[in-house]
Image 1 (cartoon, helix red, strand yellow):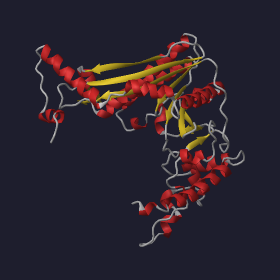
Image 2 (cartoon, helix red, strand yellow; image 1 turned 90 degrees about the vertical axis):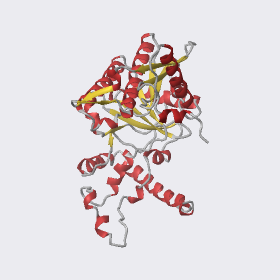
Image 3 (tube, rainbow, N blue to C red; image 1 turned 180 degrees about the vertical axis):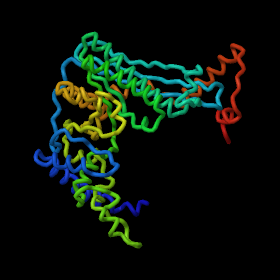
Image 4 (cartoon, helix red, strand yellow; image 1 turned 135 degrees about the vertical axis):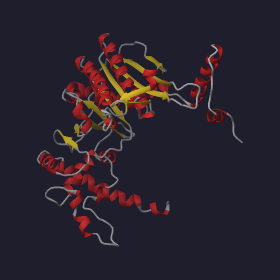
Length: 386
């Protein structure tokens, strides 16, 4: 494996230089609309960046407001385990509220919630009743992170603190696509409600994605490289030229393996952000007025992706506040927003915590004369092996 990778850096560098040239060429004020039209005609299944204007220049960070509060949440969980004493599960939301310029003390804590009732452990979607899965627990944790963040930021703003709300990860619930309609509608209703609250109070919210792997912008450049009048991958000239012993070579192959973050690291200087792009994810058609946009920002040690709802993207003052806040938070956190790092530390449930939780639960069952039974597999996992 190592021997095969010896020449890889040089080859990747060649492809990356070509991608940067394409970005600069098609991101000009007189070219980006032409590329947008080509994308709209393309018949492919990729996700594209929706352009809002020229995108080949970096935008400098504005100064951070002297008085600013940063609210952040992150979550962790103990999943339900049928081999343990009870099929309950626990969600732990870590939250942070940092005040700058006011001298007030930071609020740093967590709120664990135990779910054990039938309505928590069983779900009925599409007329079928099943036990709650790890996926559903993950959905509930993500929704709780967002709703708790909205309430925390709204309370801070009500006390007279200009506030920015940050959450770790994407604001786009990709995995809701294909879910049962009633489950999907319930989740989307909570998402829209949180964004409605924040938009009403004019509180900018942003999802911070470290080391992003998305290629929405690179996919747009693939269309620019395509020799076809209308891009159709199933009719690609590369497929027609391939033979039995010849590999498929597509015109856009030089962009293979390049992510938006890697590409924009060559364009952006530390502190700068890219233009704002719209996401074309299908799930966003159910977000109502809160269509998600995103930009990339060079925080010094990496290029991160920052996702924002439409009301932030369309308000220059709120957009600047998010940009300045992210740069300042990353500087204070040595490359990663300090508020999100603290929220994670408060939220994380480690293996030792999980074991302590179940041992305490077993002890409480015994004290109250409730029959406590753990499966043989659960017992074996608790004991040391040879």
